[in-house]
Image 1 (spheres, rainbow, N blue to C red):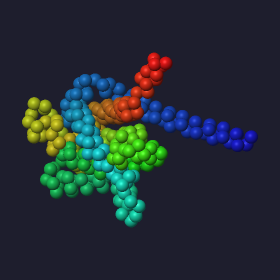
Image 2 (tube, one colour; image 1 turned 90 degrees about the horizontal axis):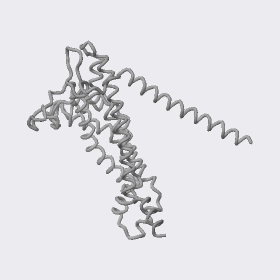
Image 3 (cartoon, rainbow, N blue to C red; image 1 turned 135 degrees about the vertical axis):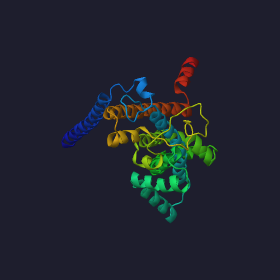
Image 4 (cartoon, rainbow, N blue to C red; image 1 turned 90 degrees about the vertical axis):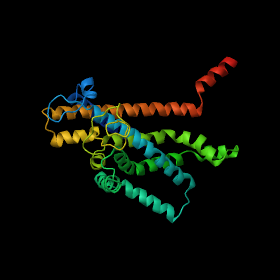
Length: 305
């Protein structure tokens, strides 16, 4: 009787905590969207920013944020997944593995401002690139790599051993088992790591101030690819939405700086939400692809019967 009562009490406590978290999230979204209402207007989404007059847009900053997301994920996901596979499947227990884990933990605890200063010295000064989009992507990769590596490693380790043993027993090689059995089973957790990494990319400002810069040129798709004005040129300054928000709140001189910052924050929140939904849908689609379409199989079995 006492155990049942304790179970009901703690279940109620956990429900209250969950409701509080959900309510806090809803309040956060409602506050951001209410203050930035009207962020979907085309003139604001695709318009050029203004340094002196009211009514500017965030078109270049929006393009920079999306492009920064793509470039950073293209760099960090293969590195993080490869490191996770090595630690989970190929690394041997010993001092070397302990040293690698110590390095990963140390990197995970680095403040973003320190990584930004490192990027300033390495990707801006030593390379001679100056403030570039690729420099910002590499700096954020340093921030994302430890967490992404740990998530990928844990996702692979959480796959039941009998699945791996069954694949090997059927004659599959170790690589075939990894690619066709283990990774598809670990895909949901890996996608969680990718979503967390994407959120860090969208929300990072300190590291990008020192690497990607505080300005962006007037973008023109008709320009030469090597020109700083071409949107796809990775060796150009790229002020993202988060940096733009920080700049408006700290040193913005336009009359409607607070309004532009609020609308930019609303766009940023919607971008994160839409990316999370798209990533989850992609994860479900990939799982169905690797696992086979069970609905079709059930229909065929019922038709045959």
